[in-house]
Length: 548
Image (tube, rainbow, N blue to C red; front, side, top):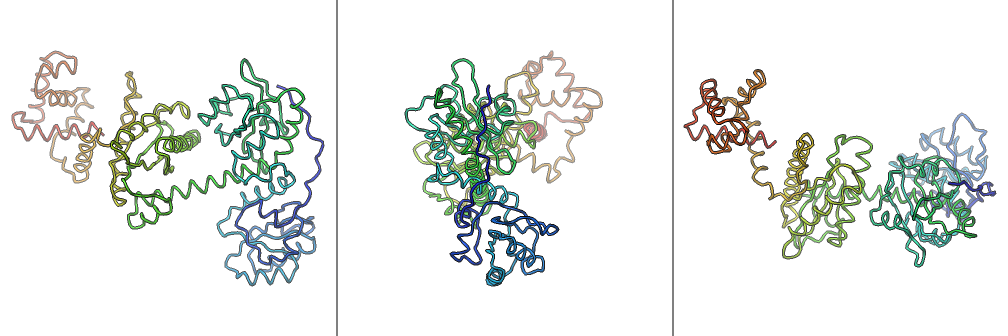
């Protein structure tokens, strides 16, 4: 691996017009006084206002007035400082101040005032604003919509003459080029199919070297894998990811590296907008899906927002990773990969995808068109289970609730999906402690209808305290105190329809051992095994407890 020289052009970016800068930021900024003169103000920097440092040079800078209340003496000081220093503009939160008052203040001090929403994240705005200043100097891909990383990857591939991939810090492929005629290798084919790097960047030495560099590098690869040109992408000091180009080689290599360095600020701007757009879309989808599954009164509105046509019905599917540390950072990253995998798979299978990550569970709406929708549902969850190794070392657990023929039945379908998912997750946790292979981790609700209903009976018994007069808890306590197996024997005896030989085979003991234990249970706990209602009740208690 060899580092190549940095660009010689280290000068500050040339100023751009305030109107053009706000277009690049793409934040909900409202101009209090959008006169032609104000919109043409040059922008070359972004600064935070410091009330204790009125001598700071703010010429051509957008000043972010954080923590300043409009209409206060502090706000007036900001405007005086900005006007005296020939600042490009001041950004504030209105906090209830009428736009007319802000326009008057702008006119009074002859400085543009931009208003950002009350819920705006200052940290994100600072990063986007500064990256917009740097990115504006690069016009090579000006026709690409900000945040469209696939179109941006195509533009980069055309400029550098090499197939491009854009990767986030977790190793997820955010965008890749499809320029005809550019050579690719097996690694490129694999990562674009799975949308994931083979090795997480945190464990990959090449990624570590690229992240440590401030310029584009040549990364030499072993075997049949082509060499790569790579660039770490940052904004405001934050690592957003990296761009990887298949090395065009020869005399094209150095121009490609130079182009990557020039494109770095714009790449950061695109990645910031893509992340912001992705975060917004995920939050919106999660809110709408939550409404569909839990709020029947507002469900029709949520369906309209999603563009959902409720003709053949839907079923709620629930997906989770059997991760031992569900709240860890690794688990959270893998949950987002699972969301992406579910979305892509549903798009392929149904030509549509309605999915969201809610409380560590990925939910999806599965259409029920066709003669056998359940076969399609089983195929999707089976495929997702087999794809799990591409996103996590832990298995994906998937469950589908019953079909909801009307929109008001979606909450019921979700409940069934969650109950099935929890049942499968419990089986996975038990199987992990057993030397036998893991049980299948995908199912539709009706696959375990009996067990799930028994669980409901067990919960009802516990909630209503219907177990306070039976002997199950007493037998369990006796086993723990005396290291006996009476409870296990009782379950094996009932499961064998009171056949001593079958019960002995189940427990791998002699038949006389079973007879002895049944006699002891009769004597110690006064169980009347000849009474069918007693047998039924004790079996029901055992099976509803063991299933949980």
